[in-house]
Amino acid sequence: MTLRQRIGLGVALGLALCAWGARHVRMRHLPHYIASEVSGAAGAFHVHSSASHDCKRGVAEIAAAARSDGLEFVVLADHNAQLESPVLIEGVTVLSYAELSTPYGHVIELGASKLLTQVERNRATVLPDLRARGAAPVVTHPFDLKQPWSGPFAGAAGIEIVNFAASSRRAGGRTYVRLLPTALAGLFNLDLALAQLYDRDVAALALWDREPDPRFVGLCGTDAHDWLDAAANLRVWTLILDENLPEEAGARPAAILSALLDARFSCSAGLLGRFGGLRFGAWRGGEQVAYTGSELPASAGVQLIAAAERLEGQPLDVVIFRDGEPIARGEGEARVAATMGGTYRAEAWALVPNLIAGSHLAPIAYSQKLRVQQRP
Image 1 (spheres, helix red, strand yellow):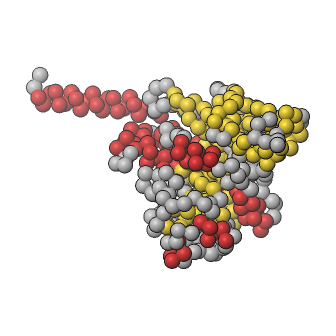
Image 2 (spheres, one colour):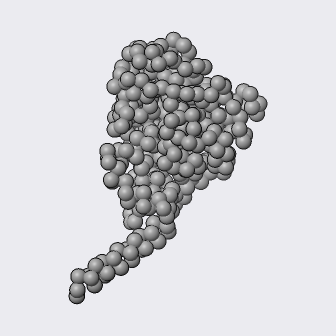
Image 3 (cartoon, helix red, strand yellow):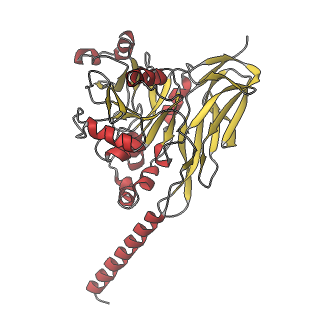
């Protein structure tokens, strides 16, 4: 066989393999939540618009994408810029709080009515300064390869325990070379490709678990800028509030902000459906006696229960953590008696199909925290 024939054969085999792979990827499907009704308002956090220097997507386009995907609110986090006040577009409540660029990393001034000046952002006291102004500083992607947080955490109201852009950088490495198979698969099955990037930010979760205050929130952000279309960007991670929004549109921004600041929400992988969620609370008999973001005394008569929506064709692996250590596990539900002091939270895991064959366990939901006070 001549060299030319060998090259031709190699090209033909390569094209055949690509065609087979594309067809196989297109035929694989993500599992979806099974739910009969919406439980709590759903929205997206840490979304960039054209107010950021590295994004061209307008707020109206974002709101339209949110509405088409069943979201009721979006929290914009543009670089050093924010709207003067919340707006209602396409029935979607849009809140806007700047993601400040500081010498120590990025922080969202959640709840702030105006921007810190450049001089104020450069101070080592930027987090307590924001607190003093009534804002709740949320440190974003604290262990990101590109822009980690290097300053003190004192004064923070929470951190991002999940940031999809940071997850992508962890998966792809500094040169993004390892993302090439995922990017190619995205041409044929975008949701399946994106779901490969659901991972567990071990360092961020460890930091979060060291904070005993149950109102120190752990948020899940999209942060994908323009490298995903608007709908896909909003879909990767969803915040599900414990309650539905008020019917009166003017009351919705305050209700959303209150739910976030009070840790009355959970994070859910939106690629698996809009109606999923992870409910976590304390129960005595048939009565719920404590919610995330709150404290309760240790009691043998109280059960901490984490329950997740079902997925098509598989049970969810639900895990309860105490001070960062897994202590209870179950299919679809986990429970433990509230007899030991500590800070408790829950995660849900599911089998996500690989691009070609098999599947792997991936984190698809995070609750907020409850604090059990040890009896003296």
